[in-house]
Amino acid sequence: LAVDYLHPERPVVSDGFSLARNYFTRPSAPTSEEDEERAQILAEAAALKKLAVDYLHPERPVEVDGFVSARNYFTRPSAPSNEEDEERARILAEALALKKLAIDYLHPERPVESDGFASARNYFTRPSAHTPEEEEERSQVLTEAVALKKLAIDYLYPERPVESDGFASAR
Image (cartoon, rainbow, N blue to C red; front, side, top):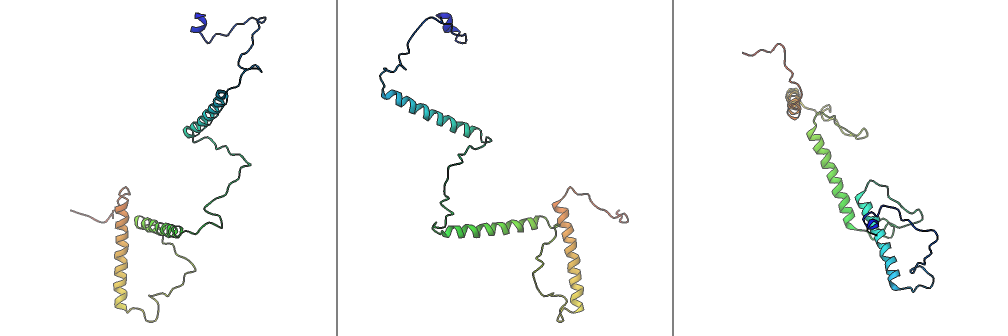
């Protein structure tokens, strides 16, 4: 008996001719509330084990019964309209516009996107356009803008190589 206790991994050896009755599973065994409670506890433990495995292993696929159906409470046609939804949509649209502005600010080298169907007047080629003096000033402003754009790109990307003029000399 002590050896069997110390080594539970050993197989149980029994005599094939010995007979015994199971006291708990015989038909005349008294049923009790403990059996029902035990079954309920085991079912709850199995459900908790499944939840724990699902929590610890989110990469496992979700098992869904194909015959289960449900309704979405929020998108049904009879759902009450909510002013918060309109506000949320407006806030998300503003956030998207701000994101686009931030990207345009941080990357001035990207091309400007415009709608091909947008119509507008050309401010510079209309009959009442600027005079030649203003054209010289305008060309100077555009030249400075190109230089500032190059400076902004050099500032934002310090890892780019420095371009130098071969004819420039310094003492």
